[in-house]
Image (tube, rainbow, N blue to C red; front, side, top):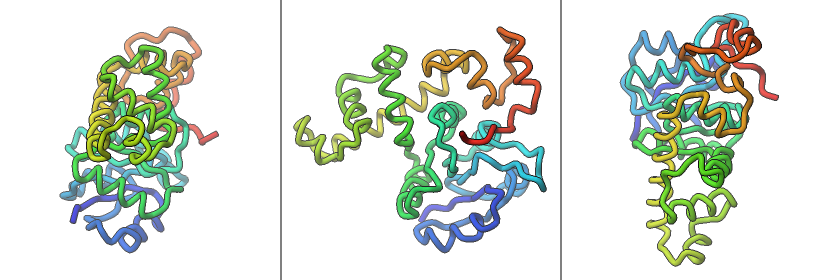
Amino acid sequence: MRTVAVVDDATVIRESLPALMPRLRFAGGWSTIEEMLAARPVADALVLDLHLSNASQPDVRQGVAAIRAAVSAGYRVCVFSQEERRFVLAACLAAGASGVVSKSAPTARAEEVITAVAEGEVVVPPSVIGLVEVLVRRNSLTILSERQRQVLAGRARGLTYAEMSSQLHLSESTLRGYWAEVSRNVSEHFQRVVPAELEHALGLGPGDLLEYWPDPVATVAAPAVAERRAAPWWRLRPTR
């Protein structure tokens, strides 16, 4: 049984997950990343909400800043959030998160993803899978083999491993192995590129992704970007 810690500003989430996910052992729950890091729980993974700021704790770190802090402290991070914007989820992987699962996912699926992250796997969210395929088609992501690209294309179209097995004439276990390699390679690639490069690859405007990035930017191209970054960078905008 894997051990996880939870950081979420919602008390009901922190207190209900242990009952809802019996396959996991919970080391505790905290409302801020600062409190969790001060407690330093021993855990195989950290279940982290992206939006931690509220009326009672308006200035806490959240988003990719919280991810970076947890990863730097040695934790494997599984983002557990209602956030749906693909480029924000891609930024989570780029910041070092090992997995992302939506709070709207069935509890069994969320438990499965969190367990996988705790066991050392990388879990790319479905919404980002299609985005990764676009990057491959644009030749912005060239690190995948031809077979890995075929598996990526199948996953992007929602094919099951059984369906891909029939099409590619490979066993399901072999396909799962390819997908694990794709997930790891994509995560490592996102973590290597600088925010500006990732923005360009995602088709974003200059500075769009930087609003979610915790590292200072040495050069700012436009006054509008500087104005946007004047506010605390960890304050995520509301989901559209």
